[in-house]
Image 1 (cartoon, each protein chain N blue to C red):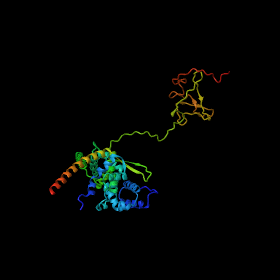
Image 2 (tube, each protein chain N blue to C red):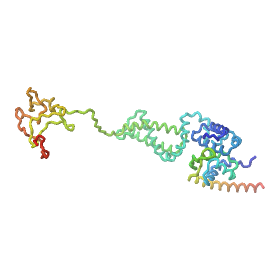
Image 3 (tube, one colour):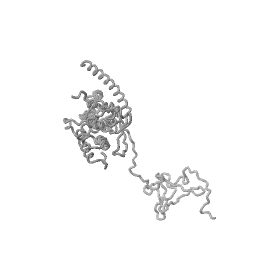
Image 4 (cartoon, rainbow over the protein chains, first blue to last red):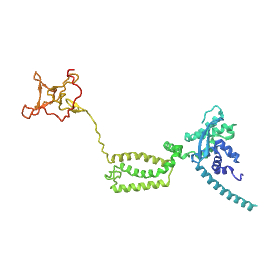
Length: 114
Length: 303
């Protein structure tokens, strides 16, 4: 039995993670995927990232432009918008609260069961 | 999807399968998603299916992450129009225009309330207020006005409640269509602007001589010295007599006759007899002419 379903955790936090990566530097789909994995989210799936980027773009959190590539098809780069930055800022606060609360809960749980 | 020679058959086949699984999405949205996947597949290399899993599952994950959920079975029975509206609503341009449309929405809410009342009035053949042509008489004009106010208030209330969905959109589209005959009716009942149009249907050619489209009643020929000439015969360049009054015989007119006894109508100035006589009272009478003093020598003068 898996104690913490990382895929479920990712599902709720991928928006924030993708926004954070793009906020750092504009990137295209596969580039964002690699940076997320390099950042520790090794389990993140291709489809989840591409779909998330498209959804954030439709919601106005990301902007988009196309750049030609010598290695293959044109790359669609994503950059963060003001709306995206606001969403990212809210996500940071929400995650910090959640992480703090969960950390406290888990630590107390350890003390009780120890 | 980009058709490039360096895209392997495996990638092409995988993309085609994903595309098929996303076939219900708007074309633009599907192409953008697939372009993203294609870039990834080309750059990552290696066996595609082993890395990404079966195309159906990949497409499902892509769809879920993009928030583009497959239509539930129950809604499959919706009409093509509803499906089209659903797709149109997801169109990028529509999405981009939404903030503006949202600000304008209250205006439409008010209009559609009126449209409902006006359309019903048209449907039942109600008469309309003469003083306020936009208000139908539902019994009385006041009742019609009350109905409009209530309908507009209800419509705005419904708008504020924020109902959404394709059926609601369909209802709004239907109301837009209904608004067309209502608008036409209002346009017809609007106070008519009086438009005076001068239409020249035919050109009435003045009989006889004319100058600047005005008939010439008489001609006064003068000599170089300013003396009025009498019984001067005028002809045009083709030798035709310049006649006045041939078709309107006038008993008071002094006609000049030729030897055959025929009247000449091209002799000027025309003179008129005193009533009941054969006497021209003032044969040298002329219009108020300021006769010029001539500088040019006479052509008839001998050098």
